[in-house]
Length: 116
Length: 410
Image (cartoon, rainbow over all chains, first blue to last red; front, side, top):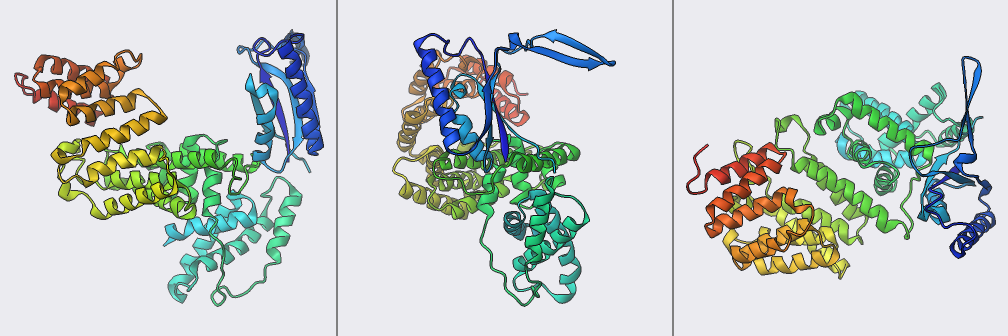
């Protein structure tokens, strides 16, 4: 089964890039990515620019409405994701617990729909 | 009969079919078949095996009728596997199958499900209760409960919650979740004083049944025995702890002749097993040890309060919380006197939540009354009544208040 592991964190609560902690945090992400790749479960994954760099679109009455960002009420925002192929939820949860961002924010684990 | 075999057969079916909803529907159909054939032909010697075989055939029917699995390939795979089972006469052939109920319990109590959902699902699948019974037991509309159960089964299937005994690294956490669900069911039954008792299934009995099952299927789990002991020891007082008008009867005035000796014996045995398995008793075992001290005291006056204090200190060493501290202060008040009990309570005043904690005020009121400080006791009782949300509890506290010298009768 494929699971999308969505990493929700508060960018301000995470170690900042350019600091020693930030470098270590990035190194941990690289190590995690290596681990899932070597385990053969990695199907994809990316880090995302902050929500302030995002745009949101909805089509209403045939017209595209575009707004800046998503500006959610919570400080936590989607910061990246991994797409992993796991035997079951327990395996997906085990990987989720190893994502460095899990210690600062939360990981949403969503099963991917299979159409056939 | 149905209730006893349901969980066992369902667990085996779930293992074979890989889908809980399908397993339940097929088993339901098998029970309907049993109802129409058993009265004439007699109950087969191996009724579980008969049900399992029949349910497997019913599953084939269901699968051929429509799409059960989202994934068509999976559906065909299950169908092919079921078709390969030889169509033997299940009356004649004894069917042996392993007891998979522990897997079923772990799946139903998976932390990815919320506790009320786990509770409902466990009662439905493992205990074989039907949705209306569970809805009545939890005082929610039947449609709400039905929805809750359907959603839970979907979640198990869609999220890929595994049907397995958790590996060692997950075992402690998952076992805690299982025990918490069972204890939740027990407490729900224990606190259900209101309403006509016969209209509702006895959740305490169901929880004890589950507790026995887990203790038997996971014999090395000390806390499973500890929880079973705790429930049995509480349950042993079911006849004496509620009066004829559904009023609370406290431990010191309960008729100990009414305590269920078999329950107590079984509970004490479970404590022994738990302690043999683990040098450091866990939280359920420790609470059971407290209950056991009451259960073995010939009268309230002969309670071994020092033994009680020793257990409280073990509990506090694991987690110091105001609830335990209040109870410990009560034990102090009987071991050394109300003055010492009040001093123990006074040390709690710095806790932020204590001002609104009903048992603190009730305990204080009782100690003040025993010391003869009638006015202060009355004030504390009034505060406790104000904070109580439970009618039976309010009635009990009111009665204690009215018994104070100088208080007007109600």
